[in-house]
Length: 147
Image 1 (spheres, rainbow, N blue to C red):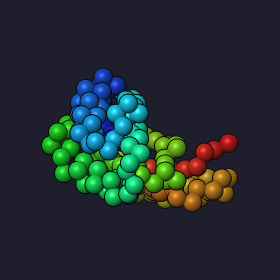
Image 2 (image 1 turned 120 degrees about the vertical axis):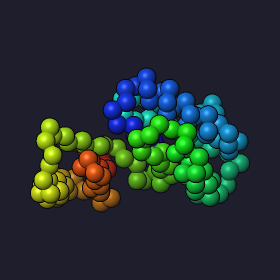
Image 3 (image 1 turned 135 degrees about the horizontal axis):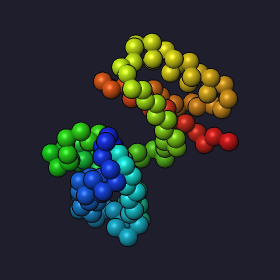
Image 4 (image 1 turned 90 degrees about the vertical axis):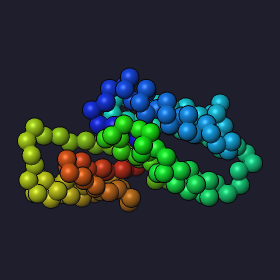
């Protein structure tokens, strides 16, 4: 998974997805025919399946993440966040909620967000949800499937 804020689907495909796939296909442990990518404005998710002979999957996912960390920053456009390897399939982000505002938000925004998160937890358990922010005040709330 990688994020490229502001990029359209074509930019994501050409500047991020193609390069990620090329890198991933350098690993014989990855089944190329079972790999698929979903490029959307601002993000790409690449799903891979490992060859049956790979027994230590945790070791492979760690090797892959270290390789991506070492090789992709110079290959991808400036501003790309990630790529991130999610090998803990119990922690998959099933919903990302984005909130934007036309003005710079005050520090109280995080308090508002935390109150919202607390209210959501009462409705449906979100045991591994998190709130993250960078300089542009982006928050991430991974959550379980909502009904």
